[in-house]
Image (cartoon, rainbow, N blue to C red; front, top):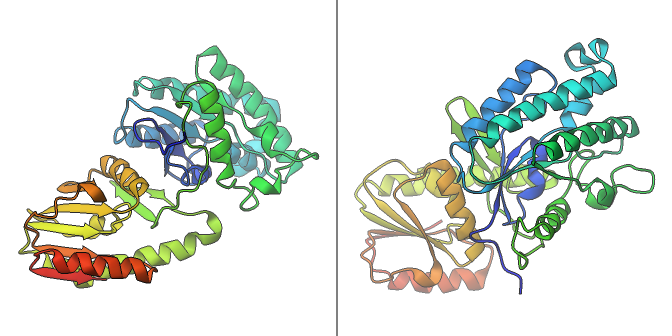
Length: 350
């Protein structure tokens, strides 16, 4: 019997290739910066990459395994002669420098968690010259990881075609892999007992919204969708943020207890003004509540309890009940009846 992961999941940090893992509840995947900012092309870039990883690890459950997703931009940027690195170093010399910097960061990060550290391979692309460089990069990085008891995940053989380029079945655009990458990684993690045998392999979770969170001067993201649809998801998220400010926030100042129905992963709650109120947020989809709790722990959202629908205490005295309408008439009718029965002073459907 397969199940969606509850206690067992992998934290993921990295560049835009983290996007492949957002569609699986086996992973909590966070984008910490674009490839030109987080890479190992120079000492200064490696230091910045380490700083961002460290800052985000501090917000995560350190008992969980952590997978780092980097490397592809290192090789692409070398071929593009980014900051003159191709003029300065031969391919072999560059690979040694970049992977040594990567290992140095790994050794420091390993001391920050009690879970295991995992490294994901630099992925292939349609460009043969870059693939040749990436294979050498992966080979040396794997040896470094093996020598230091760090698990190296290599799905390269499964995702290239007969010509050695990225198989379009696994591609969502020129560079990035689709959700099938998460399924392949899950299978490997089950085989080596990092994930339990019954773990669900299908990467079929769909984040409802696009999450942008700021911590100090850094922005991190959970895309909530693959590149082809991310603009649409972003627009919907911004529209909801505006609706929260217009319709919910003005009503909330006199409320002590609020019920949110169909909250998804809790997106609107991150736009609420601060106050002494408590929020009970629920959704019919248990996986959404699962991800909502993980996101809450990461983002530090306070005064909110994410509760599975069957566990909601309907007898509680809510001052406000909010329902986020769905594109499903039957579901909207069902919740209209629920809202009617809740003895709340303010009832909003948006």
